[in-house]
Image 1 (cartoon, rainbow, N blue to C red):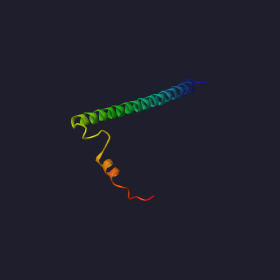
Image 2 (cartoon, rainbow, N blue to C red):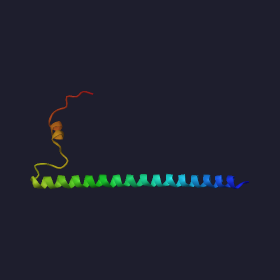
Image 3 (cartoon, rainbow, N blue to C red):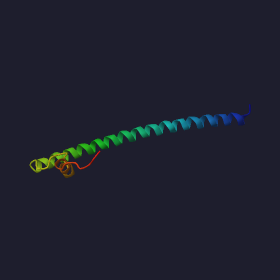
Image 4 (spheres, rainbow, N blue to C red):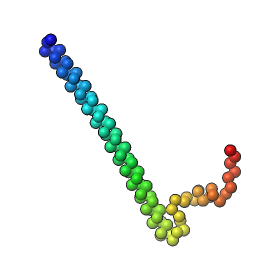
Length: 83
């Protein structure tokens, strides 16, 4: 066996270990991004809920949290859609 073939074998082994490490790093980054997205969504939902509550308190309950004008119109008018 020559030094050239040993060098090539070592280079291939190091390359495959590097690629395996990159794949693991990519998977970890994807998991972190997923967790960050979920945390951001929860923060937005909590902020929205608090804003609705503050609006309801400020208007003396005239505007109810979770109700949209389109939702109220749908409830008051009978549906004309057929199945």
